Image (tube, one colour):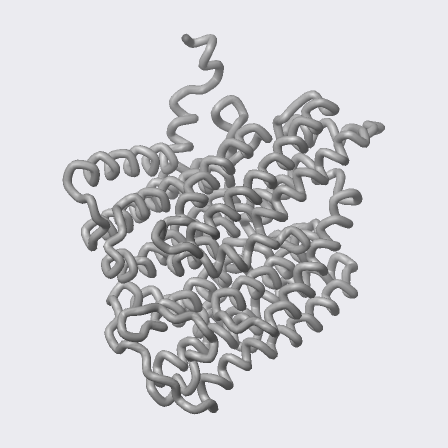
Length: 486
């Protein structure tokens, strides 16, 4: 037994204590709900939030500096710790947003458990230090997401969204696995550390098979982060999935995939920046252009936010394209503020209800400022932030990414980012114009769940007041980026 376990000893389990706890807690909640609680309710939501809070505490206590664990399959460092905190935060916001929907629709308890299990896979993703661990963690997260996308089984759009997400997600996973097999076949290892040492050895020749494998891996990740031209699933899934699920999709999975991609390109393939940087730049430009232009013609608010997320993915990829510490820091800052912007925007979409029915057309927002001034103000804050209007949080996310690109000699890429940001500002401001200057439509239902209002209030406060206390996030992201690229 000792020989089979190798160097997997107590310290390995201690380092992964948050993940072990989260998985165990989810299974215990599953047993509890099977026997006591066939429908989701406030108690289950509270327990889910409590589980996430305890997991955050365990992350703090389990961190003991940078170290490889589980025979080098996983790593704990400042980078993974910061991203895990952000993941738990995104999960908590998504749970708060879903509270009213779960109660009103009488949804089964599995919703909360699937969200917890998906977060478990994401936390393992950001700690992966081996291509096989990367793939297994990614699939663990994705399987739960496929079910969440089609969770409203009686809704044809939700079923369609789940099927599309599953088929295209399986295609992306296949490409990713094929790329991993090529890298292993030509490099002889799947360990991040071994790959890094192999490619940085003086005089080492990099096989074309490794380059092809790396490109296939990048294509797989482009699917996961909804980057053009591999974005085709995003508008349909965002529109068809239940809105709380869409809010979760727009935050946590995107955060985990970008964090894992940053680790992958900075550590095992850091020496091959000359090869992968061209691909990242192309995808970044394509995503910003598609996000800026395709959203203009949308009439459904969730489809518009889907194309918006594609454009934001392009900006995040600009940070990766810089291929330096400043670029990774800018990516993390962008992800940090994007969580609140996106969660808040979808929270406002959840407030769009008439006679107990959710509506999603942009025209339904007509004259909202007259029927619900506070709701219109909060929605406008998120729209202006996504457009990059100072001094809102979204402005700082874009500013740091542009600085990183210019510092890396990619000024022309930064110019494209500014131009597409100006274009995308049109449809953000159009929404504000509809809310404040069009004739009022029938007012939305006045009642809204307290957890939903809390999530929106937190998101709006962070988005609006980020400029007053930006130092904590900037400091932590700098430490995380330096830990990743040391």
